[in-house]
Image 1 (cartoon, rainbow, N blue to C red):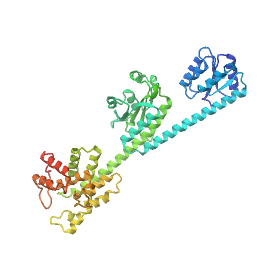
Image 2: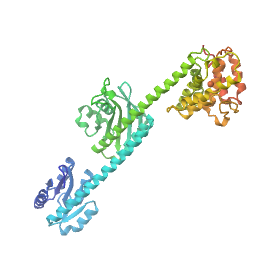
Image 3: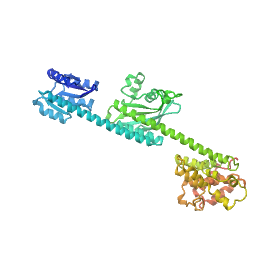
Length: 503
Ligand SMILES: [Fe+2]
């Protein structure tokens, strides 16, 4: 049965046939419209998406039925055509079926034949629709599941844009992020966009992305003529087929969260253009992109929340490490300096940003295990007994054990804490690791730690001269220190980039 939205269109140049068909189908409860010419039929299909079934004659003056089917399918690929024919054109009708007509009925037709043809065709239409909808839902479900599993913001944005382009068969697109002040959009990732355009920033309120960010509404170009302030922009677009959707911050109520302007409510804007094969984007593409954007905004907010929690957690740990040293004039600032020296060396050695950050944090926390060693031993000015020395040597393991349950720390962070007193020849502690088991990060922190110890005063001695420190580092290269790292520290000292710190 046709529901209120689905209609049947009859095309025949003979008025008698049009009337007969209209009577039969109307009596059966279908919504029917009939026209005399194929050109008129195409106009109707263009303006009215509710037609799902097309009955057409074959021989008509200005366009034959087969050509009409071809043109109609361009307008609505899901349309189901049925041809009506007499015996004389039976072969042509069969050819029409090969060309994409679903069925044919022979004139003069009986009521039963028409009823059967329509119910079969609609059943097929509904099945095809249902299948397409299920397929779409499955795809969207897969995308949303994958999106939710990503924990890194830039990986997330790349995945979202790629998935969106795939779903709507688009060649080009970009994802723009709203800056914290809510005034500007910056391209965070793009596909198929020239380099210069990929670096563009846009003011919220200007251009298409800016309009979408300001109004928190999706936009399908085609609607654009109805939005007066966008008409001028649409004229400047190279490709007129364009979709732009907002990624919105999820508020608990309907309105923007308190204290936020509308610009800040939209956290990103996704732009998609250039439909494959030169086609136009449709309302259904817009719906799909809005669903993807909806899932993406939840995921993006989660990733950012987790990052904030992680930052807060790690900053607390760093503060604890600082506090631990703050009460002792001799070790005051030691971890911070070891961290600074390590970062400087890592950058000189060409480490990437993420590795430098791992080293920075690992170095800032490296002595946190001293919390488990008595102050009376740590601050002792006389020579340590063997037993006391063994207790001090526990601090890398204590630090490791304290930090191991912290979810935000990686194996590499923990390795830096545990292994900063290892030596290249395997004579270090706590594990006596051999050179091949010590990463470059561990080798850097080992030199940085010793360097700071030597250039700082201790309860039992004053800080050592820089010449002496340089000669010590040189002497210990190969056996204790990585020679390249040792050489780098000596160079940094000679160049005056590091030296005695002010106590
Ligand atoms: Fe240490």
